[in-house]
Image (cartoon, rainbow, N blue to C red; front, side, top):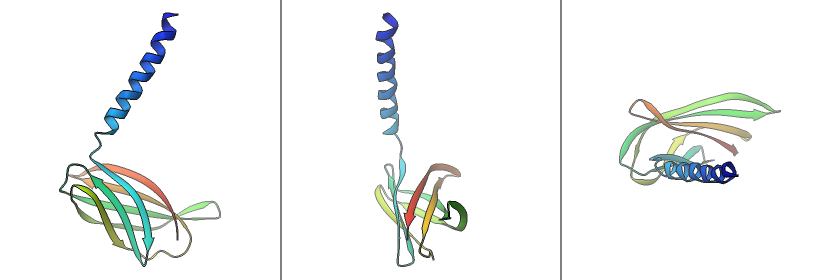
Length: 118
């Protein structure tokens, strides 16, 4: 009976710890959109201002296959709060999977995968 009581307490403690740690992430990548030959990436930096480098590997999804289409990359300067980074890109109509990496001080700070339809 004692094990039944401690298991929910342990689970709750772990969940609270995970929520607290998640709030400590200093840089995060939000929505990614495409329009008029431009890729727009929203990045939130809680520490700011900081320098970094973004790499986006674009995969085209067709007939249930994923094939690398292009790589877009460049340096960025992030201010504290929400930033929108713009990169020129020529992406035709279709379905894509974007792998977005943010690198700061030589190490990967965050990586996300975003799906878009053009």
